[in-house]
Amino acid sequence: MAMKFAYYPGCTAKGSTREADIATKWLAGKLGIELMELVDAGCCGSCEIKAVNPTLHFMLNARILSMAADRDLEILTICDTCQANLLHTSRRMQEENDAKKSLLERLKSAGVSYRATPRVRHLAAILRDEIGVENLRRHVVRPLEGLRVAPFACCHSFRGPGASGVGNEGSRETLEALVALSGATPVAARLDSDCCGFHILMVNEALSARAAGKFLSRCVEMKADCIVTTSPLCHTALDIYQHKAESVAGRRFDIPVLHVEQLLALAFGAESKAIGLERHMVSTASIVRRMSMAA
Amino acid sequence: MDDTPLQATTRLSARIFRFDPATDTAPRYETIEVPHEPRMRVLDVLDYAVDECGLSIGYRYFCGVKRCGMCGVNVNGKPVLACWEAATASMVIEPLSNMPVIRDLTVDRSAFERATVELEPRLVRTTPYTSFPEHYTHDDVAATFPLMNCIECYVCSSTCPAVAVTGPGPRDRDGHRDFVGPGTLVQIAKAALHPKDELDRSGMLELASVDNCMSCHRCEEVCPVGIPIVSHAILPLRALAAKGPRGLARFPLDFAQNVRANADIHSASLFVKAHGLWRALLRLPMVLRMLVHGKTRMFAAASASARQGIDAIFRAAGL
Image 1 (cartoon, rainbow over the protein chains, first blue to last red):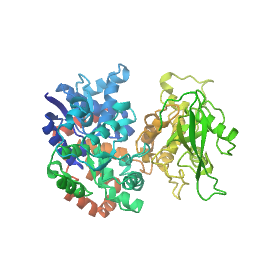
Image 2 (image 1 turned 90 degrees about the horizontal axis):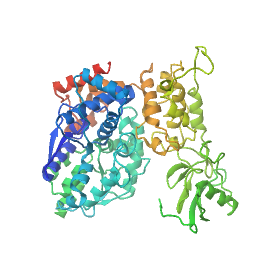
Image 3 (image 1 turned 135 degrees about the vertical axis):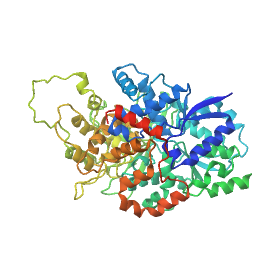
Image 4 (image 1 turned 180 degrees about the vertical axis):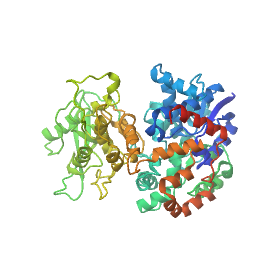
């Protein structure tokens, strides 16, 4: 089955966590998913622009939606926050009211003709819905047996106006199912009140580090070998800034953080360099060593 | 959490937190078994513990119908109102977090209440009333209307990851303080977003660290009355704080400017803007490590057409 999507990786997967983009492309090649990247899409506004100007926030996202609609494609994201912003906007654009009319007029004056609202899903949900967990399992050539993995789905994927699913269809359950199909053992280290603190990294680094440190401490206590995220933003807080969390908590964590795309690619036989495992700030050598010994 | 369906004959198990700071050195738990009654609530379980088991548990309640906001407790790790939460087969009942324990399940909310009072939770106006009652349209009050349902239970603040473990501390010498929590911000937003409010609140809001909200939406998830706290209270207050005279909460403005200039966020220049050049230079070792690992770009990478497209959106939004 040929699958083709408008690929919106988001700023972070094209900047600070380019390995997420690299691993996604590897995985898409392996599974026969064609990615048409929306190269001129720009930022979705994260959680900042809606705090300044909600209209601008919706317009930025509606422009991205329209770029996929112009190509008659659904959107594939690899960032839970991009997904939440696009989903929230797509819900807004499916209402018929004065607010939508005003958005359409403003978009028109910016040269954007908004024809239709495409479906928006995270790669993890697309794998679940379009390929299915059982079919994915057939691609596993290197089961990650014995690897204890703490899943961390971004808050934006399951809470707030851009949440993606409900009940068993939710992002947390999907991530856990993907971890399990890789052969790894999911470790339930995350509490509902946990947040990685990404969105205040540049505002209050110590507070952000404290929030990340709570989750990281629990991962160490529960003997997780690594963390896996569906969001490059959570990845940034937990990987790039892990040393900050260590200094605030006063203890060493040294726990690698993988993108879900990397975890699946590893199980599907990818070489570590092909999925950017050397690009992490917290060394992934312990995971790579384990995989090469198992192979 | 145990979601086993309850039969009329089921006996429920409740493990209840006990701690009296005046006499105890550490908390302990007492476990009781309670015969299940149809539509039994957590509050009924606590009443049973006192009336039938003779336990002198300290807990607080008043109305019993989700109005007074006094009976917040953690049940199996989730903050809820005891009067509105269904009892389940197996419960661990503990005091709300982020607040000091007075005794057992009774917590001291005064740090949050003090923060609320200090931030003027009332309309401040000099314009005389035009009539009584004054004329409002639905549009006039649309922004504040959902906030009026708040019962001031502070359940949201008890589970907020941006709130300090004993609640917001006092203000420092500059008047700056920790994040005051979502419960307080709902009270303030009721007044601040009201069309008749005339107080410039930007200064006090930036000092109250409203920009420390992590946008995790946990407050909305636990709100017993379903208030969209982030979108209806915190985001509009962050917009006010961003205009504060000290520039303490201007990060969203810097972020927007960065997007306009680069189309994609250029994190290196945003980092320098947020921290200032000298403090950013102190982080040089981290930046160098990031460069080695390909974690940052020195120069923005988006195309000219992307930048033009984004700029057109900003202009069409009136910026």
